[in-house]
Image 1 (cartoon, rainbow, N blue to C red):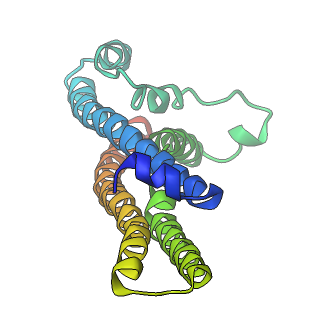
Image 2 (image 1 turned 180 degrees about the vertical axis):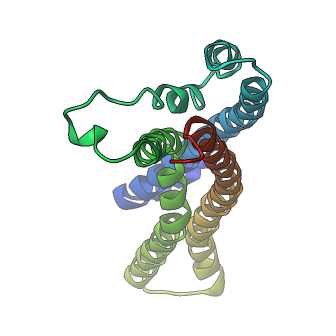
Length: 214
């Protein structure tokens, strides 16, 4: 079955479902390629930035050195969060350890949320694509059987062709869902690794800035 045959024999519903699968597939591959490049770069930059920070002689020099490696601003917001608010606000209430914990947590969560962009699309494509394909198959079989019933004579060759064409929609749905699910899992694992590195750095940074006697 060629694309031209599909366009000639399918109705509006089948074409709409095919377009939905096409959009989900293209969007998933764009997100996966873009995010894999982003997370690979971020993972490398985070390791370099953390190493540059701890090899610096002071905090001022550390911020300057980190800025040279932190291309996607994953470590810099955490360093900026250590500039605690002035007194007279609820944000400045509590001791220094509590303030740093809250500020670093908020900064890290902001970075993680930014890196998680696109995961919802992959999860959605992986979960609904098989059902969209199945709906297209059911609709195609329904139309095929309706047309055969109107013709008045059913033979195996007349049944096999339209039903086989309808089953292509199920295969198309799986072809969209499987890469999306694999991409979601692989990228999620990479995100977890980066989040663990950021959390470890935030913990060490808080321990550096807080007086051990506090």
